[in-house]
Length: 413
Ligand code: ZN
Ligand code: ZN
Image 1 (cartoon, rainbow, N blue to C red):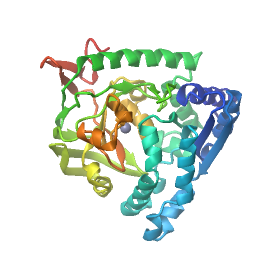
Image 2: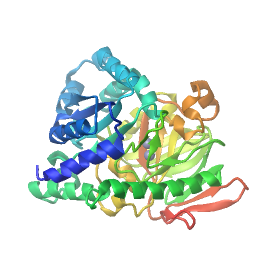
Image 3: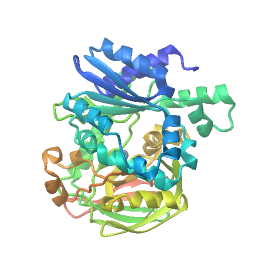
């Protein structure tokens, strides 16, 4: 691994201090693939240095998962191990912090039939509902970080030879997560401050509706009257500020489930459960996806949309400038954690209760009545480009520019 120890250490510190914001005497849970073991060991050391009470690593391995998806009988794929789901519930109860480490292997799942993948994902979605609820309503602090490996580097920089491509990927990642700055934690605090100012402006405008116009896109999205724009950091119900995604460049909120009308065209390929969906278009009527087509991965898209009724509706609206650091790298990172920060995006499926004022404290029925979508899936897809314009209908009934040619309009910069 060419990354020097200095990078691993400062990355681990960033994940602990800015990512999950681990508190003294708190338990840390790390969900990680064995491919990232060197980084994980470093995070464990760092966490104890920050006063962790205990650190539990739940290891997995993409190749083991691949074997399972290839060989298990469908009735077995429908079962998510109860003991594993119980572990998540127990750890949520202790108010542990959850750090998810990903080490992408973009092509590994290409040969797994979409319907087998969907069975397993649906089972996990159902079994881990309590964990997802804890995460989406910020009962616990959590964060996701990505660690380079050669399988990933090969897809991002296919023209570069092996040692060089891994080094390039580390360099690019260091730039987009600001690890290359003298004091990454300070750089993040400044970045979060900028996102906060933008969010305050968006929340102040009380937009009732957004209109997206771009090549192949003409979409109107209604926002709940009590919607909340969030971005950068999120605060747990106990008041701890954490950063769910490193990197993060987005300002996001939830739409009214039934108030999405028109057509939207994806602008970047989407890798879902290891399978590609490219050049796709969705048509909405009263929030529901009534028509869709994809040049690549039509079956994968269909399997997402058929997960449940909520998978036919949107759950997230996110704004990201086209000039974001991730976008400036000029490559497809082949992982949503990175790629969604290169572009304005929307998500099919569940909405975040925290995108509604007091939403985390509401019952499911209350959230539903305010228009929040529910689903076992949450799949972000990219719709931003240098040609995208977005306007907002504000509280006074005026249409005001939010984004022009993919960049923040004046007043939101
Ligand atoms: Zn997002
Ligand atoms: Zn999302």
